[in-house]
Image 1 (spheres, rainbow, N blue to C red):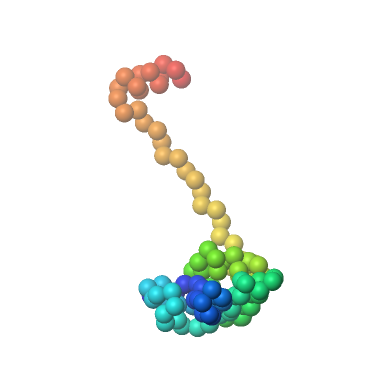
Image 2: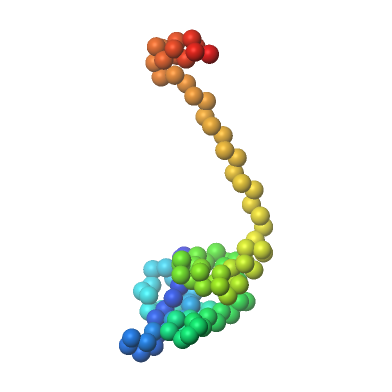
Length: 115
């Protein structure tokens, strides 16, 4: 079961507010969820973002994948920065190029003549 942190729409018609929830990736947008992690009210000026950082960090550490919008909200609230600082730095993978070989004898002779 893959868990996603995503938005769940609530509120009246034409006046949306959203819950940030941890849910199974197969469940529908407004369907079953595991836990409420926060809320987002885009219509207020300025937009209100409330994230329970302990719950969000717990789910992120367990491997939950946030959607693009939720990731932006987590960055704004500062939770994403905390998560990034807690994660151990992974070394960049070494890039190695495979040895190039000539495919035909004519190309091999041409390559040897150039060298």
